[in-house]
Image (cartoon, rainbow, N blue to C red):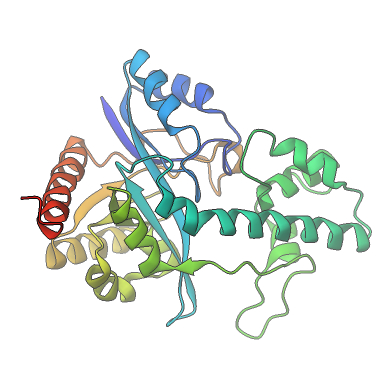
Length: 294
């Protein structure tokens, strides 16, 4: 049986529903699956029950869209074994969900002004049942309207490029202010979870590891579809140096993913599950001690 600790659903920016993903998991013999939707814990309790009915252990998780303001780059923080609906996570993430949705609306308006045949109503249909519109939903509409045949490609760059290194931003680019990575770690801890640095090779966030460890980071994602061999080895080195749990997963987004992946193909092994659960026990004990209950 396989383990996959990084999977999204259509509640955030995956093209498949949880029910469809469960079928993929059964097909690929994935026995332990973490649902890590962006900036929300919506539906996790129901997913845990449904997964158990199908013989799959669902690890309740989240992926918080955070930022390293010191180095001016994105950092994503995964949270595992969290309490769904915890007020600390909602307080931090709900404003981000609102801002992202509003930014997406402005992006669509920019596209309409630039002459693209697209409507907000069409884009919203692609995001039905989720927490808001993402760029993938906009690109899906553009694919349906014949402008391109892929989510990520030349058109995506033309429209949504951030404009770094002296380049002009894309014609539909609208900035979104993300939360501080250390704050993301803290709210995951407050929600009883285990914070893990997501795909540090992809976002070049290795340099921030010492500071994130000081903030309470407990793990690092080693295995990821966009990690090179060098990224994997570097992540393992940081894990050994800072006593971090090593995790991994496919970062599954279905049709909306940056590349095609098979659920369970970045398997970190049962050891990762055991490590997360043991670390949660340690953190819970520390919390009780700090509150004077032990």
